Length: 170
Ligand code: SF4
Ligand code: SF4
Image 1 (spheres, rainbow, N blue to C red):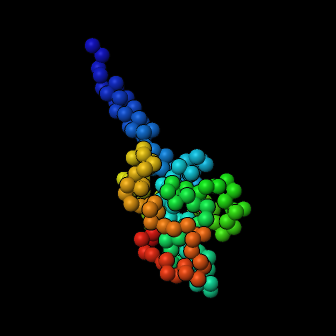
Image 2: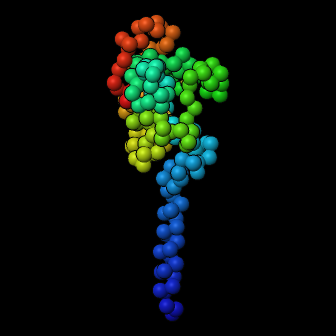
Image 3: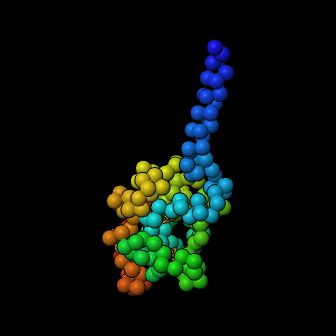
């Protein structure tokens, strides 16, 4: 009979490697290492960053001192909590901010629940995130999304926006 110690060592090493391969991309990769599909998949679909926000005109554009409103961008589908023209959003809404690994850490006004902000701060994904649950509805069940809580931009006059300031999207 041959001595089994070598096989035992190989088996253990193989198990360690298998465990490493099972780790999901958001745990294995930095934001800058992710490909486009991985980056896009990180969005939990909450829609909170698509709410109209108010800020003092004298403050820089990336100031954390913004007030969220419960008024949704005109391109947001308030039920699905998704942009209705994502590929052309910048042409239609010039102040729509395009997130990237280079700017996410500077955008301090992004909601604390946002997957991009969470990963950039080393906080990982929450248990309600669709990538964890495998169910896009989980973000709505957890009451993280804007579904049922917002009104479309076209229904609110600009001078009435201060009346719509809310804390819950933060
Ligand atoms: S706040 Fe973050 S996770 Fe939510 S819709 Fe915006 S980009 Fe996606
Ligand atoms: S244009 Fe689309 S992605 Fe940009 S804020 Fe509006 S709904 Fe959101």
